[in-house]
Length: 381
Image 1 (cartoon, one colour):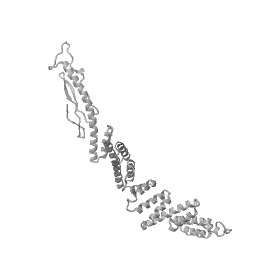
Image 2 (cartoon, one colour):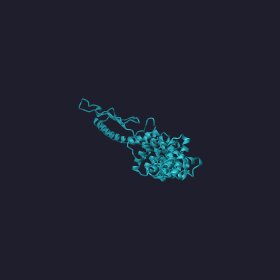
Image 3 (tube, helix red, strand yellow):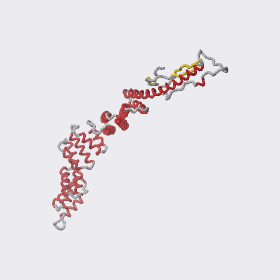
Image 4 (tube, one colour):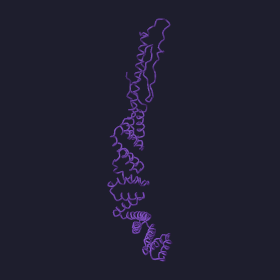
């Protein structure tokens, strides 16, 4: 027995299930009665007439047929209709569940097509709750999560889909990197980084062409220099101005305290950067040289320390460290018994500190006097 497709309220979408009809009693005979259900009613409405409602026997011993049908025949017909109705309810329930599930996917696709991504996501999640965790449903849900910016959930649903079908990994990485590029275009470094990291988690080694340098700069700008360095490495060869990328790598190494590598990169690009950039490179080279000189001096590597202090002094940068570089150089020379060069170095401290206020002037003068008027002519100055 068939009926018209029922409509889901507010959607106008037919649900592909037949309607159930109910038996009732008319003049002692069972008839069929249509049941009207709302599109979202959770269950089937019971409308069967209980057998107790059948016409009672008369007080006489004779059962009178009504409308040409014997009461026993009516009861048997009612029982047959009752049992067939139970079977129809079971079939209809299964049809309803499947219909709702497919309806949720269809409504989600329609919402996605018109750009209503939150609504699409809600429908896809409904399909998942109804038990549909097939690959195509998981991919739809993950894609919708990505479009609304919920990257962690997108990654998790893509991962579940990949467990069923490894070929989904390419699609997942491509989708998440597309989200990352959109984030880069609107200068949203946080979203770009999250999308990129999710893509790499699902498909390690995926190409980051066009994304590596913006992501490296995002991490560096937030003080995450360790995270920035791998992306600077990936950006080499991609960007037209490779010298600029190397310079930024050198800065990241310097911030991490790895001045040795930083100096190697600074030296590599010093002659390639623009004149306006050259002074900035010199400042960082002088600063790193000073830091490494102090470390070498503390470890007793005085020759290395002298060479590195000399690099800072020759560059003239950073200017606020020149007096200290001269003073430390003078102390190393005095310790080696090179008294005249030591005095000359201390005198340079006086010249540098006169311009800056003279914090080291008194100490330098005292050391000059000690060397000039020292007792004995051998040993350290």
